[in-house]
Image (cartoon, rainbow, N blue to C red):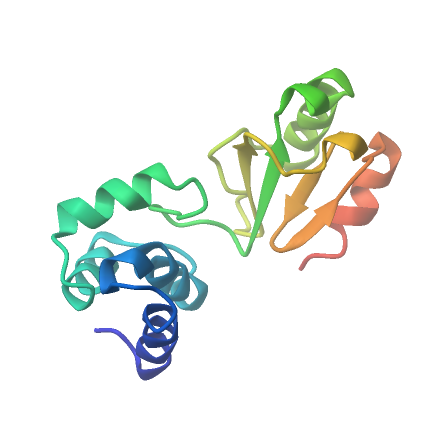
Amino acid sequence: MLSTEEIKGIEEAIGVVPYKKAACIEALKVVQQHRKWISDESLKEVAGYMEMSAEELDSVATFYNLIFRQPVGRHVILVCDSISCWVMGQEKLKEKLNERLQIDYGQTTKDGRFTLLPNPCLGTCDCAPAIMVGNDLYRNIKMDGLDEILNKYE
């Protein structure tokens, strides 16, 4: 069941678009903000509220790469894998993250602290390589500064 806070956030999103379904991504983001991910049950609840079928909403949720359809850690690390980041050392950055966290893309650390995911572009090609931890963007990543970044997140 959608909470009062979730309904309020969804209604705000609906209020700025011409028709209800146009706010479906924002509605999913509101629920994800509260629950950390979108379970099948959550998807059905949002779909009902948005007057959509669960299948219709799932097609949106699975297309949009920042809607998490499985549980994630407390902090999601998005590793930019654009051509600019690749040229500037993204592969070494990914290897360092794999080694440090003992996980690969799509996995979560045993303590539930981090989930590691690739991202096609973080929009900062002039400052590659880049990662995003939650809502925090880190640019021009140096391998020796990675531990300092990760240590900020409990």
